[in-house]
Image 1 (cartoon, rainbow, N blue to C red):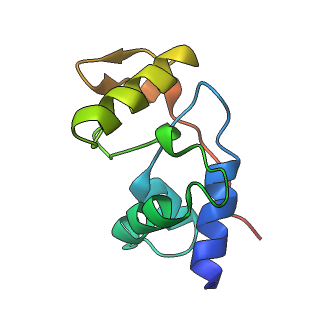
Image 2: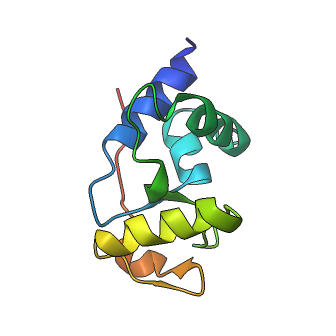
Length: 103
């Protein structure tokens, strides 16, 4: 496992209930400002193995990116945590989790 992957996993595990982070935000904190797509791949391949709260990660526009059933499940999970989702969009000013870079 690369250092970047390890950092991404640690960051995602720290997102508290009722908050969200963006793929790009996680990539920056993990040390690769151009690694948003890598964050997506890590979520796709490691969410179950590491019990990641994948539903708390959204795109930079504050929107759910997953189509179909995946998007519906993400919306339902976020709403259950108190995150208001309207037409697939989340208010980043209200729900964005601001974390500090890991040492």
